[in-house]
Image 1 (spheres, chains in turn orange, cyan):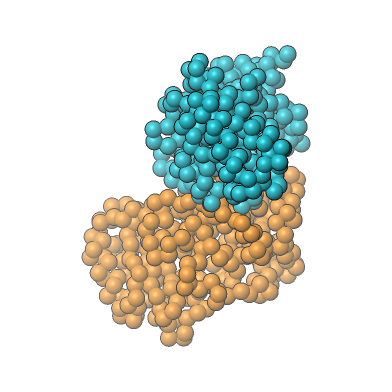
Image 2 (cartoon, chains in turn yellow, orange):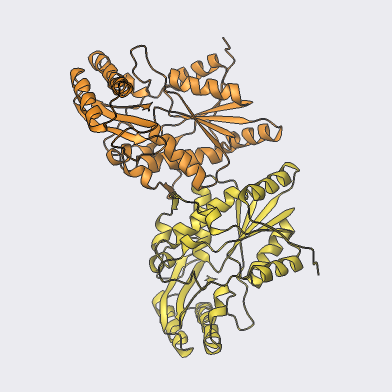
Length: 285
Length: 285
């Protein structure tokens, strides 16, 4: 176990010049954008970057513009010291942890306008969310002009938004999406799991169970999305998960709904357990 | 007079790698984004870049997304061969001239959302114009990651939009605005001047005359914007310029209207001569 100290950079100019110096010396740089409250899902992204790049930077920034009114920005867990310890153990040398006022300076008014990708699934439930995500990711890419950036597949639609932005804006960065990391009972790791009461935590395993059910029914020959969705709803209800925002079957790599599974398909869902909103997805077909 | 040949690059990857190679070798790169139909105004931007940077790239791209319905995208002059001759004479080594389909590929849907700057002056008359400008400029900055980019001050509000975007998106490029270049009678050079009939061309000199009138009245002690605007309207009418979109007095570096001139102030105007729309501005105070 490595326990070297993590350098925490808060200044934009310092972060950029460190990265540019590394690249000028021929190093490749990997960026892992996070909102902190790190868990094993984040750390696997860090592992991937450490394995593939000469230098890794983890950004920790709870981005205000991706939270809507009444969402959980205020209570979002902020655990910088613990995050740095975890990163030090993993061997990550540098954290970029700017203040909100360094990222959104007075008079800030330019944003990324995300297209149709923002008009379904999470975008419908969380208006403005992907505009905020895309804007801060673009800023982070410009501050830390990395060669590769690592994102978790749990946030399926976020990965699509970032990939679309990179393509449309001709950004010279490779977007790498890494598999969702799960707890032993299948719950996708998320910083928001910390909000769950013990009972909700038990119920939350039902999210992945319903995705697995769709997969096994599909493998047994069921291709009709309405039928599969019905089974998933029953399965979620059995786990006492009744506040389901959506269950969606979309063609993999898109947010285009399908009625029958005829190729790679992402099953995505969002549900509320008490005051906590969780999302998950699984690719089948 | 230099007459070396200009290299015309149409491929995005080739353009980027040429620039990155130059920078890796320690050279600074200047970008002059244009829509072609080059005139002396553009060429002075090229001169500035050649003087200040080791390598200069002129982009020539008639950007469809900055034209509104019914505007002049179709008739906008396209004169690539002549442009290249002019640039060769000036000693500019490289032109980036992509096709529209290379810049806006199928499925493109991410844009730059410009804030309040787009809600006055040109933005009011040309909805979506600055969204298109900012988007293509961001793309050009990403394709040609130059150290400096040169813009003409005639497009005052465009310069502000680009500066705001560079600041808000943390782009590592210096935006340089260069003085407006004028014909002998004062008409600001513009590719659109080519649309003017001989009579309109004579009338067009009235635009700058009205700006000069405001300046001389101000120098004689008149600070009231309503009074100055009235004099300008009369002056424009004397030149048979009656279709005035706006006459605006704004605090320099902003689009905030002022009622009295108490400091550096930009007088901006837009008018139509026949089917041709022209803009100009002058800083006074």
